[in-house]
Image (cartoon, rainbow, N blue to C red; front, side):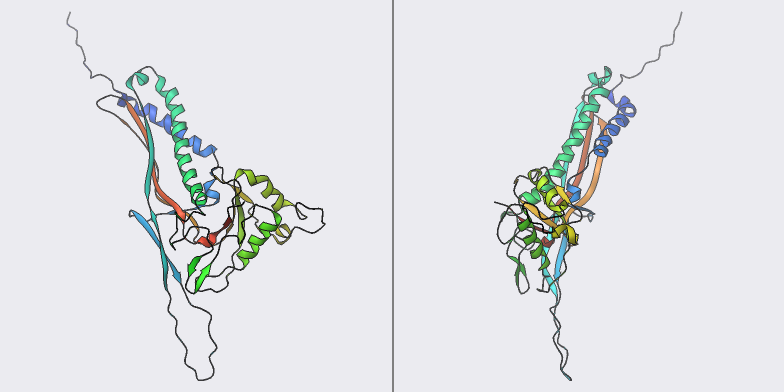
Length: 310
């Protein structure tokens, strides 16, 4: 009896792509959905431009207008660029592979789910750490901003001198030191030395200061003493966004007050998270990869007034 036999090529792990990839993507997205980002409390995400770096010119304008006696011609002033802040995009990514044996035995689903979560956590950790490091290096002159000095400095250059976003006397977080910081913010100047209105938005602290921050922001009366004085931080309505806690800050005593300076702490996103999967022809393994491209930093240091504590 003649029987017709159909021959097929051996199955490879790529044959399982339609089964495996949706499962892994669901697990990956689930990790992001369940976790609250810390970096986004401090840094504003902004779309990057289509080139390998992003530059922001920081301009200076004019000083105060002088009096013009009758018949006196108007005088002219010239603005310009004070400095350029450059963000250089970097690619961050990680991958893992599943062997053909794992796929054949059905373990690709269980193991893939576990390691998809690990992969997601790795990318989250990178972004959180890079963002926190902007503040970890805020008092280190080896990490200057576009104006040539570190984020928190007493000598940020402007047209006619300098300004400071560093607490004049280093201090741990307390009622007195916080009030002094808020007074200093009220005295802020622009790049021509004119007084400006900066609004303090929130405290930025390490986990070791979270309870002290809560006491200072929520107490009706002054914290830490028996006086019956009101707490002006609460009564005036300052720091109404509360406290942002960054778990990866390395100095437990350092703290900052973030203001509403518009071009401050930024995460420039050049390419959002991409997840891809493909089979390897030589080994028949299934490879899963996730990458994104961005840079994080600051443009206007007036966005963050701080002190390293003592």
